[in-house]
Image (cartoon, rainbow, N blue to C red):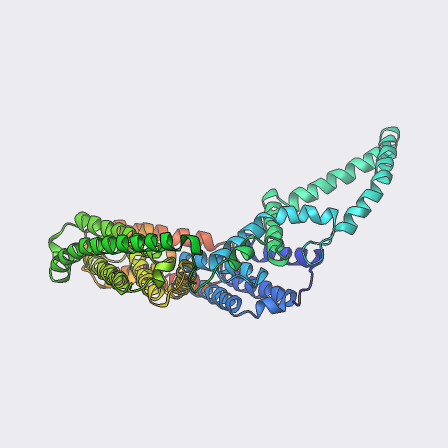
Length: 493
């Protein structure tokens, strides 16, 4: 493996870059610049690891989310970027990892161990894993006795010579004044935070736990042969487990069938718009919780019965058929929830939780599909976890392409009558990305007459808050969403 150790200078250099890009700034163009610099360091440090296919995917995902932060600057894009960047570091540190969750937690551990790595570097060099600061520690120990003697004579001269004392006091007073003027405690702590991040990025991980755990996992389930003395007992136990699985899956399918028939009758074919908003809200939320429970139960139960030799049991097609049927019925349950959520959106407009339900349903369908593949292709439970983690990663990145604050505002303003628009939600709960849309409503005179004055005042307040936040930001925080707002505000004035 082509691994090149990084010394102190590289760690400090990246820390300075981090501090310069992010101190007193918000995420914008700076996050893309930092990603490019950090990835360049990683490529130079360990070329082979960065060439791995899965690592490249997370690099691509990280850069895409960074570009989308510059474009729409949404909170969702920022959160997914942090997740992607952290996972990328883990996979880059140990290319053997295939599970996104392991990569993420390896990076978290690396950040937690950054102070320890820094301290260790003063005592002994670890090639490729430490900051190589042992020479500094050795020189400090050699200088300790001369420093003590020098301090002793300095104290004697300070008390014995008034002119030397005055000169010394002036020197230290000027030095402390300069430090207090140019360096603040928050700045120092922020630089240290950047130093820990730089160490987590550039120092090779010496934590083999996740790598060793990865080696134990397989994607294809293998048949386990029983020892001869217990062969008959093992076959009887397997037969009993098979019969138990048939009874349980048949009962669960029957129970879920009743639920689905009722839902299809009431929601697929009915028009439940007569429900009050609070009742509809409870209906959607309860449906979500039920679906989460049903999906988890399906994964646990099916994974239990198809975890070992039952997959290879003769004439187990009935059990597999019941498993497929339950997966299909869970898909029907998911479709029912989609219909409920869609009607709720149609009646009351878009909101963050309602969008979250749609994203969750997408992941549900992916989970059901992978569960079907697991049973049919005799895959392991680890296959489910690894595959669905990558699917979730891809779905979250795709969701970053949408500026949800703008989409919510546009939909709610354009798809409902003026009296039904929840302006309180758009003004207080939705971020300032929608200011230009609200100002456009005001300019065109589309605000409801009853609440017009109060809404206009709230829009002005939101506009002033936005301008105040932008006041001390530099070009490093530039993003298109803020640029569009400022341009619209300038033209409106």
